[in-house]
Every structure is written in C-alpha cells, then in structure tokens.
Length: 470
Image 1 (cartoon, one colour):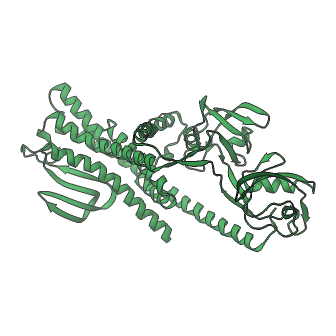
Image 2: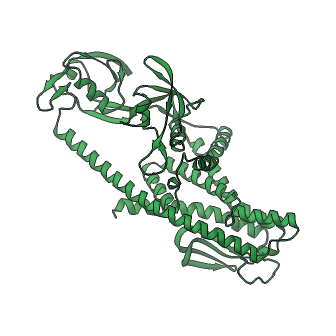
C-alpha cells in the first residue's frame, strides 16, 4: 500500500465523517429542541476511541468510521424503557417525526449551502453549449455509431446536450439501451443511435467519447525541420490538418504518416503580445528512417482544451442555481433505481462506504472544487436515501409514525423489532456484497493509476530523448 493510497483513504474518511456529523447533528439538535434526553452522539460505530461526557451526553469518535449515530433515551425497542418525560418514545408524534426528519434535512441543507457557495465563488462553465468530440475510443459504442473526432453533439434523447457530465450520466445508466443523438459532421447534421457498453466490469455504461484536447507544440521545432520553416513555434496549438480537427496525439500522427510526403495544410493558433492569432500554413513532411514514417519535426503536448470560463453569481442567482442543481442531484438515485430495474445499470455499479471513501479521497487530491461538488452530491443523496420508507432508515421511522397516527396507537415493540431485524439482515447482506465490489474496484483503480503514471513517465522519457515525433 503506497503513501498515495493512504492519503486518499484518510481524506476520504474525513469527508465521509463530515457528512455523518452533519446528519447526526440534525438529529441531535432536533432532540435537544424537543426536550429529549440524548445518551450518545457518536461519529462511527464500535469501540469508542475518544469520548467526553457533558451534561449527561457522551460525545465520541468510534473505531469503525463508516457512519455514526445519536442514541436517545427510550428510542430502542429492544431496551427497557423507563417512561421518563424526556424519553423519545413518550414524545408527541410531531416531535418524534421532527427528530427523524432533521438528520436527512440537514444533509440536504448542507448540500444546498455548499452549492450556493460554489456558485458565488465562481464555477468553470462552458464557453459554448456545443459538445465537440475530441477522442473516440476504438471499438467503442461511439465508433460503432460512426461518431468521429470533430463531430458536434447537439441533442441526446431529443434534449439539448447540456455538458459532458450530463452526457456521461445518461450513458452511465443506459447499458444496452439505444439512445438517439443528433450530431453535426463535416457533411451536415444527422441522427445516430448509440448503444452504451459496460465500462470495464463496473456495471455502468460508456459511449467511449471524450472532449477535445489541445495538441500543442511542446518544444521549439527542430532547426531546418518542415515545421520550423513553416513558422510553427513552441506553445502553438494545432487546430486542424487538411480540414480534420485535431483532438488527440493519434489524429496528428495518422494524418502526417499518411501524407506520403505531400504537403499538408495546418491551421494553428499562435499567442503573441497582440493576442491570439489563427494562422494557416503548408508543411511538407519528410521520411525518417529511424521512425519509419513521415514527420514534420515537432514534439507534441496534450492538455484539456480551454472551453471553460469562470462565472461568478450573485447571491440570488446562486440560490436559484443551487436549487436546480440540488434537484438534479437528488433525483439521480431515482433515475438510477429505475434503470437498475430495467437492467440498464447493474447492481455492481452501486458503491458502499468503502467505495465512497475511495472516491472522496481521490477527487479531493485531484481538484478541491470537484471535491466540494462531490460532497454536495453524496450529502443530498444521503438525505434522500434516508427519507425512503425503509425499516432501518429515518424514512422508516417516519412511516411507523404515520401508521401510528392512522391507527391511533403505535406498532407493538415486538413487531417493530421483527421488521427491523428482517430489514437489517437484508441490508447487511447487501452491504457485504457492495463492500466486496468496492474493494475489487479499489484494486482496479490503483492498478489503472499506476499504469497511467508509468505511461506518463514513459512518454516523458521518450520526449526527452527523442525529437522524432511528428
């Protein structure tokens, strides 16, 4: 286990613990407001590693960091109840309902506050609403649908293409389902049907298409090379060759290699003191015996194409946009469950606490704003899931209280206990299964990252020791 993995897990546990703290804080404050005696406020389960006793309540951090709880007097039907006036079970129905509802509500409010803050601070947003395809993976669903680099995606399932994240979500929950798309090509607009394939063994779908990347000249071209003679210089961005938009290394390599020494038209951007100029030049590739292909004498670099701008929102705009984003995030779970029933998402796509910790830590290391967005996503879905009327969730408590209100008396402790035990057995089995998948995915992610790092090192060494790239 390397240091990166350890840091990722530590950061992930911290992020998950923060969400658990927010949830349990909701229950705690509502219980105090309603005059209910709180016995324990714990982050985590199991053995108490750190605890303090204040005003009759034990505040603690426990050994198993996946979750937490607030224990109230008279709450557990398995324990002997004293029927004290500050016990949970003797409170009015509305008080018990408020306590149960407060935990999920705090998660949703917390997510809304995070999103509002992000929109005020500023978010990267697309300069254009067009989705221009940069990379099409070989043998992917996109390639089978004849989607090519440089194509523009206008609509998905009859709706305007609203960013790459929305496209990935739609593909992720649509394994084997034909999706209609309207795209723009060099020959005009056309309709295609794409059938997402399963991504690896993760249980989610993928189309195999990615945004454009910027191909730039990473070093000063070789002296007397075709590129140097044509005026191409370091940091220039290659936009197209012979009318073909360049979105990846291979696009450029393939076109130059296939030129057979004939002149090619290169459109590129060059940054000067006066701004950015778009220029066109003609370059005649030369044959290199060592590389056994045609070259123009440049080293290439790859970066995400700059199609984003930072947009700051006023408080009013931020509150409105956070509401829309919260709704979209909160309904993902229902869309996923619907597609899960239809077989367009597989059960192994679900993640438990182990998987959530891994992803939180990984995203935190990659990008702070994405980490905050992920926290908001998990927090709001934690709130929504806990409101579902399942026996061991807060929604289950609310369901029991509703039945008590309708019947005029509570469900017997024996029946409540039986229902909760059956539900607990089911969820423990599901938890074990999903945790097994999480560990499997974690090993795969680490292998992929190590492979990626090795490829980056190899690529760097190759560039440092050779100037034979096109």
